[in-house]
Length: 129
Image (tube, rainbow, N blue to C red):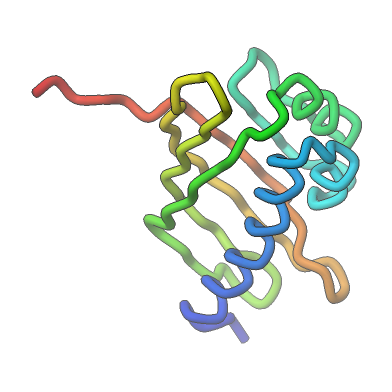
């Protein structure tokens, strides 16, 4: 049985809240622990990462205090053990301009834990006025 939209949003909010806190504090090990053992991860640098060590390395190169502000656009339960989400995420860091992005994540439930299986972020285009 699939989660309801409300349940899927609650699960997504919980996972991404933990992720956002770990990113903001620079806790790369904790960030990596929120992913499956072999995620498909595409950040804002060339090439995907395919394991937790690669995810940790990616976040080790981000500024401390990087704070994501997350706005869900679409959240779907794909069954009992998967949630797909498309989000707008603004990344702010002290002394740097905000980076506006789109983020797609796929959460997978492994036993009783929801983990990030797929992560793909891209810069959100701005349309001319």
